[in-house]
Length: 190
Image 1 (tube, rainbow, N blue to C red):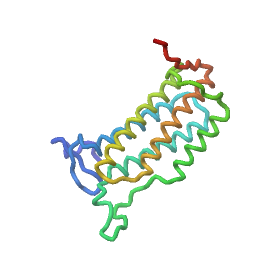
Image 2 (cartoon, helix red, strand yellow):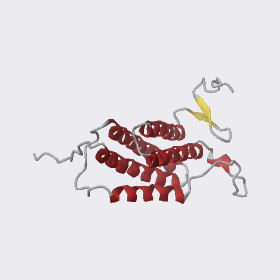
Image 3 (cartoon, one colour):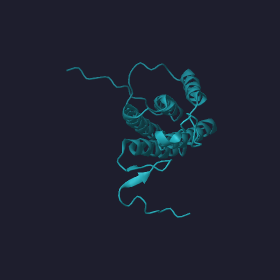
Image 4 (cartoon, rainbow, N blue to C red):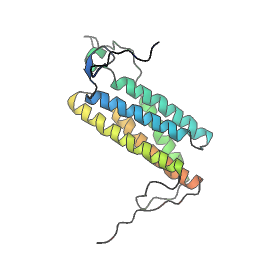
């Protein structure tokens, strides 16, 4: 299989289902940002982490590919006239969202209560989590914009929302595991 197809040389790309759209289309921006997020999650997974966290991050990366496939599918061509699925693409399930919630609850049990916003940083692994969290929020904004134009699966937004929260909690967990300083943001008084 060749990596280059030359079909995008004029600035368009094909969605699952065959529809061609400009490469700057909000749908392409959405799944492109999810792809970027997946690369950042891979960077987090490459940090010094416990085995369980690495396994959860690997599962998250798999779900991000699922999200990308969902976003890369032309909604008009995904269903037959009867409403049944024409294209056999995987879907995000409520269980995927619940896993993130369960993991956050488990991590939060071992963390001190949060009383202020915290400044990102303190250690490379913590910073990697915060960068992934910021990209996740951007993906969420892009998908929200897409859903204003075209109907979409609400589980995509729900998953991205929980994932950004998960990445924040993971950053806090790593802060304490590596004995980095968690710096509270305390606004200056004018």
